[in-house]
Image 1: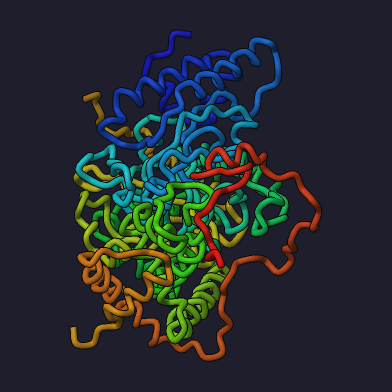
Image 2: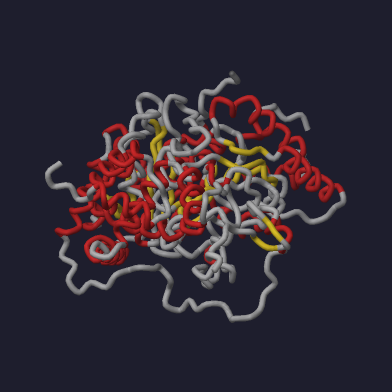
Length: 492
Length: 100
């Protein structure tokens, strides 16, 4: 029973659930250890916007009681998780890191939160993000910026920065984020953890605050491929409350993460690799070499329209955002700023409630949809998106998976790009294509730069073939051993 | 900025359409940022897209909507707890129509 204080916190979802089910680890003891570590470390990291100490302890105590009574436990029983603060949690704040929703408590749980709770997970709290998930550095949070645990002068990435930080720093066993153009993959790469952007439609978005509806997906972030696969299996599948949720059965995923690189045909995105910094490229090339040695067959491949992804994405995503965010009018929820009339009340509430990045995207989205510009921007972008999808379809006729970098650089410094929206948007260039094509992509750590910052590999598979990602990711993981390395943190 | 993609007047018009108000000091920086993004996005004009179908949404063709059956909705009292202003069990909003 006397487990060393720090160890269970980095064991990951699968092993914690096992230890709890077998009685080697108490759920309450584990939840307390995480809450203590959050108290000690989160002041310097800013991963959490809200910690639900009481709720977490109550849920953990309930798991221990069930076990003591010999009742059956769910596959996530007693595992402490962190949830991105754009996923609705009943009775807990859900702010989207926006002043507009400060203090808002939703009357219901998101589908994915409901599923986690039903399987016994303990929800530790809500994590920091770029406001309304719009950003790549977490700096657009209206409250405070989260920081990279490997170097706190650097950003953790975004928009699911808080979730990635919590997972990397041992402030949660794993976490959920959301990914519209790279928002779980890029922060996972910057923080040295693993994340999945699932196929569009694979996970219900009921209770996920909408940003860009043809792109948004919920995605798990964990310390290993196995953990990510376990969370994915827990939350994926059809939900009639989300009209875009696929009715395809999920059984193919049950056998996920079996491992095996042998015979896999991997398409290497050479031009993306060459566009990345050398310190990013080197560990990825080394990882590809390991896969080849393990029996995978590599061939070079290109997605000719991927270089247009930034333009396509920032037209489509802002157009959809301008429409989705029209609901924030200060009438039914959120902060109302009274004005002399209805119009003035709308304007005052939205202008005070939304930060600069959100306002910029609403304005850009309104522009590309407005009369006279819609054909030149929005319609062109939707056509170019079709071309990009065709690129993927052609690539997957030749290979089973694609491999390339997640990001062009390692984590950048706070304030380095905050004043230059275009530079910030360009940092998403490698993650946007999979979002635009609706295909699943895994971001997995493969090494470190010479200065000790994590580097991520992105694997992409055809729609609904998440199992291929888990299989190859799990084959690579033990050959690298970088999952064992932990950020150098001490309580301040 | 001789060939600006977007003018100050257009920015103010977009703000009105989006129900946003920009302070005077915010207008020019916002215009310049939007302009830089639109200039970058110009590159899409070079693509040959004649006859290409757009992809405005990602649903698979076989996905239908759910049956149109009455479902229980959220509890009214719970929903109203989050409202900025409530009156007689309903959302209270600013006056919409003028009195005659």
